[in-house]
Image (cartoon, rainbow, N blue to C red; front, side):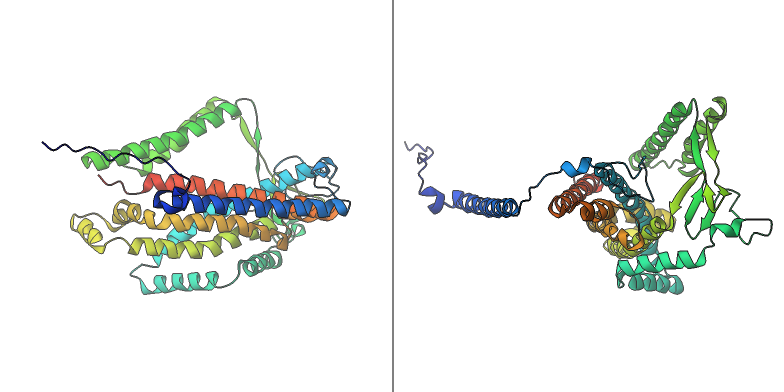
Length: 404
């Protein structure tokens, strides 16, 4: 009788790190990692030695010193006597603000332009093609300067709103568009406003939950629930009802022309608006091409099959084409969001004080701490880019096609 058994396992020998294909790749990767660490350690030690020889040391103690400069657009309290650290925080918040606004606006513009590029209407299709080719082939810095220059030249000065024979007037008595920026009402939070804000957040969550339930019901049973008016009702009605029940806890502070400029309300500088729209329109052209490519990647037979079932074209695009096109659209969309964040560093061209203008500009020039400031800038952009990539990758995994 013949018996079979597994061959005896050979004991591990150091020569197997080179001769055995199971360990060879790990050996070379470990050697490469050690070489990279050694090179960076040598460069770092050389940098520290040279700085010490020049009487310089690397440290961030200067961040606690007074900044002694003003910032024209701030989201938190700040004066010229605040520290360089607070000035850097103001710059970071300004960078995040313009990047967030530009990402949202660019996505809306890109999706609309990408869908319209495939329109059967010849004029609409060509107009979108002109928009895409014109904006994506001109550097974004030029668009920032063009939009800022046009805003400054076309919009009226604040004194145009003065007197009985004023040449300009506020929109709805609340919004003033001037060459210094946009002035709009500011909310004044009174007692009960926190409860009202909580109800508003709950309404937003309710809209998301309802729409997810309606979509799941459609996919499981084929029953179609209305999306439009229930979403609007859930979004507005609870907040409006509690707004009056709580005695109007939130009022508005309207801007008024006093002296040489508007006082009160919220001012959005022209530099922020120019940077926001330039980044959005420029990146929107790239997103439009990504959307067009994603839609064309979906088999035309699926569109024809949906049409044969009597589904309207807008619902075919929403329920059949776009969900499948997202797997093609989202990966390049991540790169576009990263580009918006990095291109926001061009804000200094129009005087908008982002992190490059504060920490990498005035603070660096005042303190002479170039190495520390540049390292901090690199760390900030690296962290924010990795955060955007992580969030978008989570979303990409949630919408990708699940095969059974």
